[in-house]
Length: 351
Ligand code: SF4
Ligand code: SF4
Image (cartoon, rainbow, N blue to C red):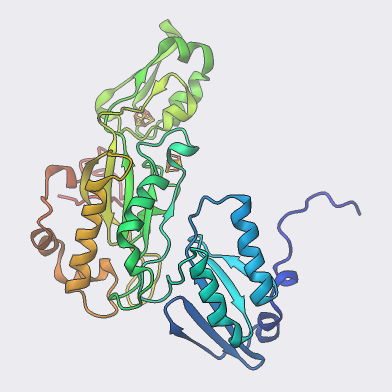
């Protein structure tokens, strides 16, 4: 039968021998030092050595990393969902020399246990078309500031930061300890000529989640009911005539307290605590300072084992706002028009 779809390779063909032999029989795991996980089974131990990666990498970088894997662990490595590199080492003698060579090549080892791991982020100005801010630029600025926590293992718990450059949040920012989200704040500026020439009007009308876009058959274009618009930018994906970018008014919101894990407490969505910070490239000082402030507060006040959201839930959101000095404003309150009629979960506080 002809092969019609290559698809992903069967993962069983690429398992390191030590994983294949221990498959389904693992006994326990431990963390001998920051950046190293040790999984033990009847066939022996697997040492996963975790390094940060810059996330957007070139072919030469991949070649260098593969050369390290060839030298120390039979060529076996994997990329984690947060774009860390994990070398899968089965010979304990190779762990320390690999770490030394990684550090010498500028690949910091860390990101396991009660530490900050790589920031997961979306595409930003590099590639997408609706960003309200950059993603990789803010991520670099924030991570440069918090880098010391990557190589340690003594935070209250793990810290997961995510960055999404628009409200569509394709980076799963809504379930992170700290989420940085690019926000537009103005109604799209319509270019009726571009709408007429390059747009399927019914699709444009249908794409708006709040039904703010109405057909305007007389002008072969559309109108916007401004008070219904939530500045999501969906319409710009449907029409080049719906300009959502606004250099002066676009910026960054900060949400905190989300998590995917169901350990101890149920998974939770992040909640908005800072509605707007200015876009200030190339180092976004207002954003990095705000993140550092929240992280320091959590480290100083949380109990061992508490994720950021678990700490806030224990002390109460009111206490969080007074402790942090972050002003609580009307922007924190959910006045989304449908929230009173539906049971949608919101990132803001109900009244
Ligand atoms: Fe594009 Fe929005 Fe995803 Fe950023 S978050 S890459 S703008 S869809
Ligand atoms: Fe509708 Fe979003 Fe466009 Fe506003 S920005 S008109 S809410 S699709």
